[in-house]
Length: 577
Image 1 (tube, helix red, strand yellow):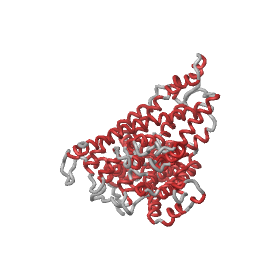
Image 2 (image 1 turned 135 degrees about the vertical axis):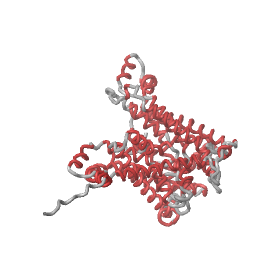
Image 3 (image 1 turned 45 degrees about the vertical axis):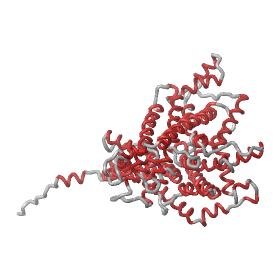
């Protein structure tokens, strides 16, 4: 009689491995990448600000950064620039939002197109347009004034603090417009009707009733525009440097002139980072207030205010703002791009397509920069969306604890409050030395772009995942499928449209990013935005305009695709708010 067969019981390790959700490895990798992209550069930035070149601890970087009057003056200039540009944005944006949301003003579609066009134009390209318009000698507006009045020289000088404030306001006021119009769209007409019954006119009602109700949104937009203005590099570099004054971002750039003083730059960047984090927190607190009952999304009927004879002056004001921000700059940029010599004016014998042809097909530098721009932006978009999708899935499906999920969400959104120029210095500090020597390679630009626009990808991925009922995945798992099977067969097919839209939303700003690229590029990794900035020193505005027009054309193509995928408000969701 044979003895019974004895089966060894599986080890505890084997049982643990069999029951382990293998997808956990993916989430751990995603967390590691997040720490690599976001936490490491910021920690290195802080550490380097207290280090000498040999690694020894020092406070001298801070003494150098703030020990000279012109460095402190640059910081004060940035604060003046931020407050002034944000104030002017209110003057531009609030009336436009009120007119489009609350009144019967005609030609609203045209104003919408012009505001979208202002979104499309990179701020530094808008600065180029205004150099052509209001340059102190050859600018079109100055030439026109001289011709009409006989003055020796025109009155406009775009290379000045007022000029810089004006240009930045022209390309930042859409933030105020979006915030204010979104709030106005939720205000019921009931309170306005009550004021009208008591004898108040439409203007008084709007000033005393309607606008105070949306004051939190206006204040939030003011803070956001302030942060945008002090963090910009392109427009100040094109206008402030020739005007012989500095702001924080241009001063940081000068610290990187050979030999780069990374420690001093890191120390000088700390107040900018601190101000940005503090004011962004305040902006979120203001815009998340729920005390205004009419903004709860349950407002009553909305009726448009009949402007009567005032609708034409209102339309004139809106067209005036849009002319300054969109129509006039684009006209002169197109003229310069299609001109043999832009100073010769609008004549048929001055028209040519050679600038565009040479830029796209014959100039090796431009062709390589164009290819680099597309490749880096595309690779950065894929990395950002992949990482954002993993983190959004972890957080929304509660695969980790509440506190860990909150921390992951915070880290993913953190780059939104980090100015691009500060992030670039952090990447430079973190990845210019072993063991990860990335400087001079395409990877440092790709990873920096992916980090810079990770919040945009996360907002869209998180929203898309929340729209999918988790019971669909549970059904797959009940039938024996793994989590990966559920994701592959259920989640991904439902997310295709949203992910394509998110890709475009990351790709577009990545093709135009200058603040990050200017610190991290090398001669072999130049992109179009950096090339455009470099060419500004040569005064070849025909080439500048041609490069800018190519960027705008690329952006328009992708926006049209985005309209098909995501609808009319596609560009208005391009950044987390």
